[in-house]
Length: 390
Image (tube, rainbow, N blue to C red; front, side, top):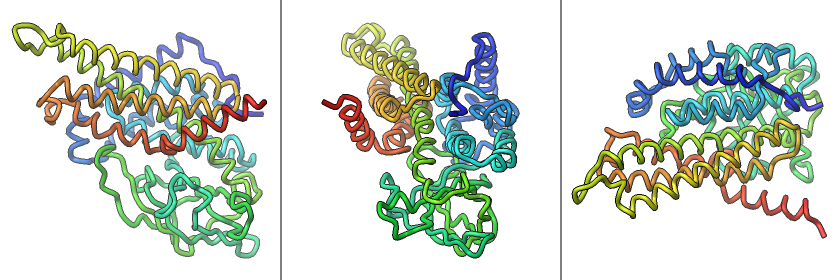
């Protein structure tokens, strides 16, 4: 049974939770986000508060110590966090993808040992998938996990662009246990990998945007992972296990896009009423009105698609097409809205005095992360044909 299927939350409880998140944002995030982002400084105090709010266990079942939220509520939390500072949403995204893989496919012992620690944030991390020569084509990974006796696997390889890599301490690690398997996915396995000897964070990567959060390269040199940490206990199922988690990740990216698109819109509506040219607010100029109308339509369309995908996920349905549509539409909305916001703000949009330049730098990541938008289009098209075969 899918552990995420048919979860419910009372509307009053949801409103109370969202109110607590919004209070955290108003009190702790908005006053400090700009300074931390420009300094590329890790938001340690904010992360600690997110732990106390239970957000590291947002989608982990209550029976394992988590909040057990439906994904529809989780998406609303991510939208609010991203509206204030998108980097914060990444702190919990890949962490919860890892948790989802364990909760959905792990053995009873793995769930008992790891999920309560994931829920509290005692163990925190993400997913180690991407490699220096391998991005969206995960079947092309080169990291190898070789069985050594009955006790351990020995891992050698490297991973790139890994979120939470520096401050995190546990990762869902995708590796090839049978490098010669045909097709390649049948030789791929997923492990719960805690930091230890042979597991090295080699460097922190500098980025255009999405700052403040640690994104690093990982190197594995004769790293030993216990055989009991093979998720599900059977080799050859790793790609399917992590791809199901990426549906959750794409809903997260879509919700981030909604937050960024809405923030760009709200800043623009506010500024357009304050800024005057030719004797009247620019909001009264038709050229600006056309941009605002398009921005509002994009944001709301993205929100509805994201909610649609989250509802499908919550019902336990296959939703790679729905999540792909939401991710595609919302990320493009964020990019287009951030650019329109910069044009509306003029020189001030290019200045660090306003959040527009940060939105403009953050938004492009959404078209790349959790599978490029080009890949999403292919997934959508294939599913359209599959679901409407003649």
